[in-house]
Length: 95
Image: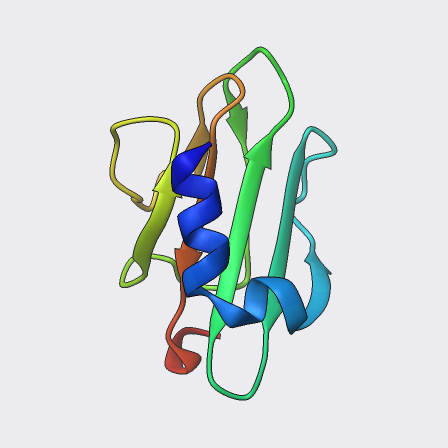
């Protein structure tokens, strides 16, 4: 919980930015973006107890991890382990 509190304190757009859901192509995977004129954060969550595939129109390969509940890197496989969730800061060039 300390990481989440710290994340919220240090990322103004999480609190006050615009919100938009992102299509993942999978009903068990939620993705959304919070953004303002300066920053963009994407959150991806697997609500299933099984490995899930997802797809996004956004390239996450050069994103900066903010928080993640697994010790894996973002890769192009677009797979999430059971209940895996992460938040990344995304460059405007990747959207």
